[in-house]
Image 1 (cartoon, rainbow, N blue to C red):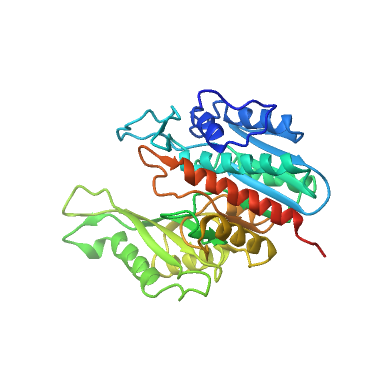
Image 2 (image 1 turned 90 degrees about the horizontal axis):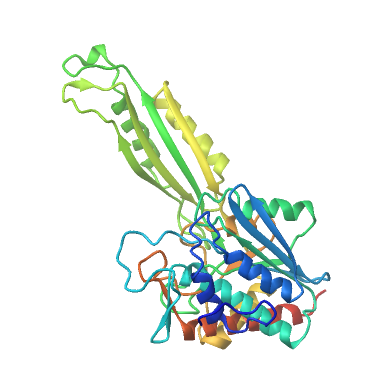
Length: 386
């Protein structure tokens, strides 16, 4: 695995491609050649490749075929920095030891992406797909996520590129391959609240207006009761206070303002708009003079079970021996954007080492994942369509 796979040869070995991708130090928003490596191979196999650069971010969309059904395979080439922990092996060397591939992105998600590409190569080596196959690959998943998948989806909408289903190779499995398929995600809302009062001497509170007291009343009101009890598919929504900051070094001064930050992870009983309205009402009730800045990074979504998910579960069970659970837990991913275009599910490597030092993926796991994807592709394109 000292060399990148040839652009002309089918990339049927996921380990070689994963190692080559790891050797590209593509820390967001840098690409470092990762997408060029993929684009060259896709073009060599007949895909129509579009390199889509938005500001600093490199993205890629490639498609093959025209007839339905239309399947999109998605992933990201960007990775988080190595961090300040000590790595036993260099983070961008892509080295194999004792049957395990090490490096930043090994499981999140260059390994999964390599498995998708290798699976496509194996299927295409058998026969042309009876439908349309596309890849959506971004370089902005680990960063702000402003110039990546969301922008590519806008580009796709403008051209009528609407898949029937999308499979995203996120590392969904906690401990072993075959545990979890993500079919939805909670939404995420971040809020920054500043409450203003009147500064004064702590001994003369009647001459001041303590913003901390008002802030505490707001936070008490927001956390007094659960947002909901959850659903059959989603756990209960959760509001977590992440910061309270006054910045007051004096013990005898009532400050003029106080700040708090909080995050809400919400299920599909809410939207960013309904929660924003609730927050603004609660803040106004206790603090006439305040500023509330809200950012919704993603709405809750759910992909209902259907034929594509059935094919995916069957492929996982056939190759891993496990019946994968359909789950909606965890944080956000680019699936939150894709869900606005088409049904989407996430299934990928074991994620226990993601974002850690010595991130890794076992080669046998990578091969099994590739076989799962291969079997899924065969089933998706062979299934009868009404």
